[in-house]
Length: 341
Image (cartoon, rainbow, N blue to C red; front, side):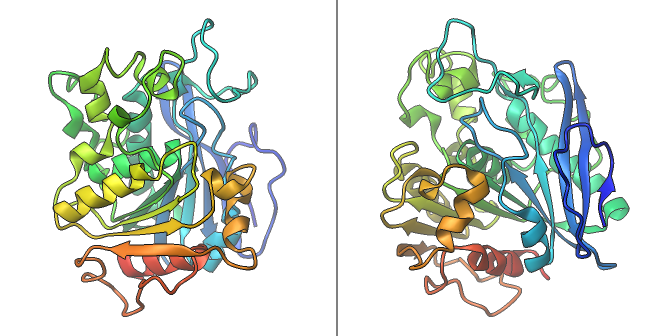
């Protein structure tokens, strides 16, 4: 059964008896255009947990359609999954970005903090509409890959968007106009090969960090600091599951290690899986096929590190002790632990 909210952007929804799909739901209307999401929910009467997925693409490319198989995982993990769009970064005409940008991509564009404003708005909108769509507003996780992993991590360590207000960004700029009565806080974070400290990446006019910020890190150091998840970690940060390939030559593995170390320093819950021999996107051609690599035979080897606090608030006694393969079963166990199912 598929529930079409607006099929204008949808390319071949697949009907199943197990999943209800709401495609192209508008969650925010910006000056640059409508921002939308797709929602996949098991066909059940129970209120299931919600996972909010943020796609990658260097903040300048791809769309919310570039995802793993959420019709499958919504059923396997017994949760709703929302794949959200967010304003992509502007690419000036004189700049050649380091990755291909599809000119047909109609996603609205903006400059940071527009991206995290949208992700937090999506979380609040989804929480405000939990009863309508049938998931649990108290059990929300966020998951992202690469640039989406950065935004997922940032959404995890920043409770609400207003927390970024100060000398750099005004309260008016960060006014939560979308579902302002709802909370933007999440209960868990899953992040694949994320960028966690923009200040430690190469700083060039045509680099993705400069495109995100609207200028170089040297020009906008305070913006880079506020855009870096490592600068917002506290002891109250939600549990974080980090996965990163040791052979990643796009986002250095030190980006995940740095965030893990910061979480550990604040006695927050975190686990880090360093996948041996695999690069960015696990070597797959897109996020659509990345999980296939993790499920391939033989399964990828990895190293596992966790904070002493990891698992102390577990809803189940199922360990994440490094013996579990780094595929969908690991994510399912992490969600079991942190969304009180």
